[in-house]
Image (tube, rainbow, N blue to C red; front, top):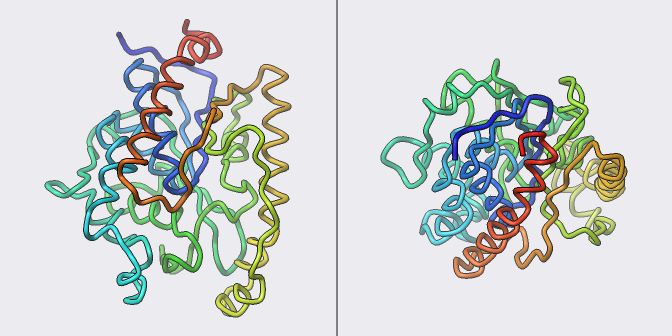
Length: 294
């Protein structure tokens, strides 16, 4: 199928750790369909989906959240004990993306694609939601260290330093992990949103507040944001349902999410990817109609 460009719709990827094994199916389906959107943004695992989509790489989209989990350097309690994280983030993002490594990234294609890109993270000191764009991404390292920062789950992964600031998972910010606000700030009013939780899901209140406040005593904005996140997240989702009802958003919502954010079993991850890919392919005619490129 020849490539087709949509002109007025932002593509928004939610985070969700290894639940992106399912939503990476949407990346594959969009690349297969030759659909190019002018704005692409993501947070946490959604940042990886963003990069893989903009680099037009269905192999990397799938492999990042399926077979790669079996890599012996992916991370475990031993890397956690060494301070590298339960997910060995520096290896996962900054090392494996290099040429000849486990997940080589096509920087040339990414750089040449005309789409506006946004990657969201959370400033651990100021408590601000931060979005990086092309102006912050002059090379592969600049991109991947920011994807790593965006994906740094508190406690289980060490915070990341970027330009002298300390960052953790972008899902802690005002966006609650769904960068709708960034797309709006850039002028978009129509949205293709890829979610990683089922439609009936509601986020429950955060537990372990005392531990988090002790663990992040140097960064009190982090436990405060974690405590506020459930209400923020549920509110953003409610807004998305309203946009969907108004016809301003197409929501790709998993019919059944079979894995959690920390899933490591490759068989389960592959199965989740196939479910997501099947749903995305099935919904592609409706997505094309929404985009006006049917």
